[in-house]
Image 1 (tube, helix red, strand yellow):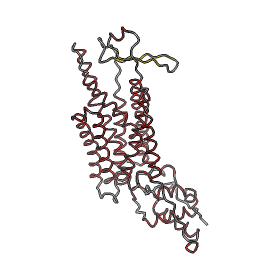
Image 2 (cartoon, helix red, strand yellow):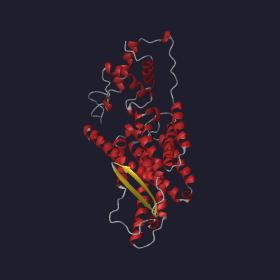
Image 3 (tube, rainbow, N blue to C red):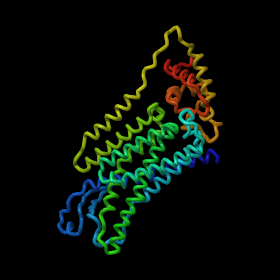
Image 4 (cartoon, one colour):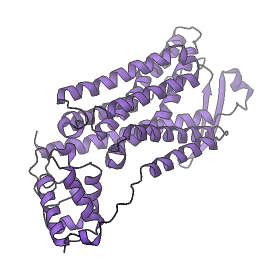
Length: 401
């Protein structure tokens, strides 16, 4: 397909994914907040009707009175609003983007020959298998005896996440591994909605329509999965934005960083959920912040020793070498008119096709090259010696003369 139209599909796909994701996460966070703010009904008549809690709120210039039933009302209302298509459309649009970027461009975005020598078909099969197998293992854990103990189940899900992070980073490029880890968690979330939460709600309605006393078990299982979803959310959002930060996804211990940041996100979410209940757990917030700070400190780069004066290189000569490297390894994509297949315009508008543009983008070039984020999949075969030369040029002040 023409690179121009691929760019449009990419733009529109990301936009739809962002919109639907906001709708799903917004609704999910609101209902978690709502559940945790319910108070016992003040009217004894409401208690007799089966109402377990209520909350008053004000928003947009109006007052709202929300009530929750212990199981179900005596009579079902004519109009009942469901919350499912936000989840389904988020997953579908996310899967579309996974196929468009990482599967159609597997050789560029998904495969790193220095990690594993995969063919595009092998890489795609592993990616799809991760989504399917991740759900089957997670769902099996939830339905097993472990599912009756939230703490043990949480540890088991953490173990699954650690194994997935480790495994993915040992077969895919860093960015490909991170996005598949997030896609796996996103698949668990939408699987919870499709296979557990919505069927549980349908069962309650079916029982009411049949005149049977509803079984509260499906609702309790749906509640458990809903809680899981709220703790998966922040790690998933992190992986969606992680492809901008090669300092994390291209680190030698990227899988450890992925798990550490995921735990930090989940811990911060634990704090906010507990705060909604009026039982704030500052220890969870502190844990999240400490893990993020510790991660940043642990991977901070060491100072590069400066060469002795006698070994100094003529700045103009070194700059000429850098320009030559950039022309050879980078300009196929980063030019006013890219020649690399699949690019209609320079990625992010960064053009490096003149010495002046190279000098202007010195810091960006250094960051992307030293972290091995660029060239993408190292498709132009930049050598370590070339990366070191660019780093030395940058550390010496990125002088051109």
